[in-house]
Length: 316
Picture (tube, one colour):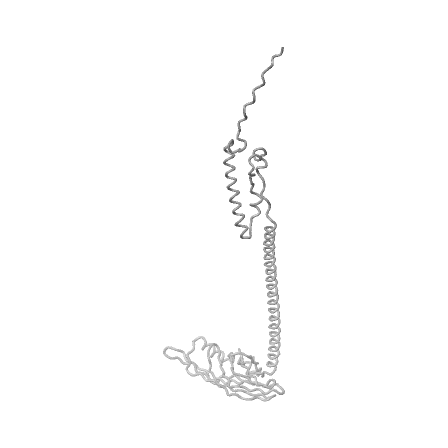
């Protein structure tokens, strides 16, 4: 006969293993959960304060994980414990867009201002170059006009200058005396210049002129001539009488001059300095001149060759 087995004893009452609160079983999880709750509370306060100021950070909202407060769900499905924060509201997104548009408008405005400044600089440089070019052209034209007028005036003045010839050159006295220390010279020289006005209508006016005559580095005397007027086609002879008395000279120069004068081979330099006035275009023009008769040989004058002199204008 079968023995009736006693019923199995009831299972011992199941002790609560503490899964209701994972923090009781896993102390490490309890520490992490407390830290995450503190972070969530701090972020919540920051959101309220930042939202009150009208600004927020999207990176902090979409990067910080939040922990579900359902203890059983966290233990059963730990993947759900980490979740992203809720996205920002539409009002916050609109504020962010407004700020973005404001920044974009400021950047575009600064770019437009920069372009405007560049255009102004280009315009200013272009105007400056045009002004410089116009000024250079104007100055060049003025200089060319002045140069042409000067050349024409120079040629016109040279055409009315007189012709000057040496017609006489004679020593009436030339001797040397010796003192205790120096060598002294006495000389009388007669020089005649012939001035011819070959113009048909132009009248020449001569101011007082100073004559300076020398030979072999010896000054033979100076003379001041009176001014005069010369009509067209007129020929005038200027007599220049110079005297030299007891002038100190070097032995070599004195000997050379006396020896050449004896053979009528003396070489003399004659210079006249003054002003010549002419009527030109209704105005009286005063022109500084120098009549230079250089290296005139006494033998040429005696033989009637009449050496020509050079008339230089604007010279002293």
